[in-house]
Length: 538
Image (cartoon, rainbow, N blue to C red; front, side, top):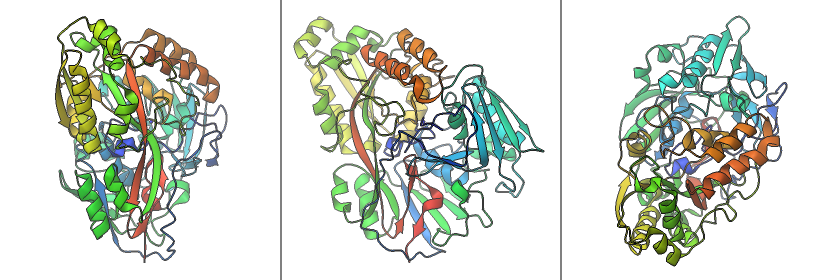
């Protein structure tokens, strides 16, 4: 298989949060013939690296691991939730057909083998997989999951990510084979569908139970949920079908996982140092205090400006978007947002993780020219609402303030709105907010997973929350989608560049996003904590 959203795990990384900046450790393309249970993802590299501070090899079972969530996840339904904090919980409760190793290899999870083309995919389930209620997982249930996501009427947040619109799946319960057909070519169909988190039968029948519950085949079950506070998970005995054959009998796995909401980065860092928290992702200046702890990092797009192009919004005008961008020194904005730790973005996908290499930004974005920006607006007195995620810490508020001050020089009045990750989902993605500009990093597994965010259906039925309609982008995507794997990368790269030329999307800084641990070790899979990799130190 060739390399091909997890976090962004980025399985697909959804809309921003500190955790949503975690992106896939690798994306893998659909292979044109048979797959195997552990195939190298050539050309892709893992950017995760463990610090040398954790040298202990003695592990202890029966312990409790406390993991920090930067905001409340809201609905836990894996097919309907938009923010990454929900997926952070869901990865403990649900399995996917395939998984990615920390080094960027594709490995088995629920499926023992897989194969496909740009329009077809086939998966053979491992025998003996059971749901949290003890019932067996069937191929027809897996097919029902894919059909739910692929049906636009269900408004799944994973439409176009885990399944192309209109795709159909069938399951043969006797052979355990799931077959998928796509009405349109998808260059990475096998691994895109393979990353879908599979809900069991009862949850499929009553999705309301999934909002604060779970019904999956995962290594853990949800024993309690206190929205806004904590989510407690319990290790499943007899679990033997995990990623790469992981089982729940491994020494050092926590018997209980407590996922608690801590919205302040300084507080999260303090809890790590005091031992109140076991694992947490921390960004910003507080990372300087954590250098002695075990850690793993991944570089991801952190700074991305989105403009609302909905009719009636001032930023629906490309001239306005261009002028606003010309007025900003993007390198300065990036350093403010990343508190001095970032580096200039080279595209919408993390550079080390994307299957399609190269700088897709280049000179396509408007260069800094304050005088030209003033002239372009011609004295227009614009009023804009700028939204930014508070989960990104003090750097986000400082970056938003810098934009406000900069655009005031153009005669533009900017009102700032700091919102939580849950509000990004319920207001920005759902289309209810009166926004014009957003600092909204979106971490993705592959260029195919950007498509739904920048084209197609708009809220409330689609994820094109910025109402982007770029004909050049769509044409290049159409061309790229007919070619499996990296052979289509020139067209994928051209499509991305078309977005920048039209100032639909302005990536400006990448930053290392680091997760730390005290009293435990772990590995990242596609940028997120891999539940089966957590080991409590003795």
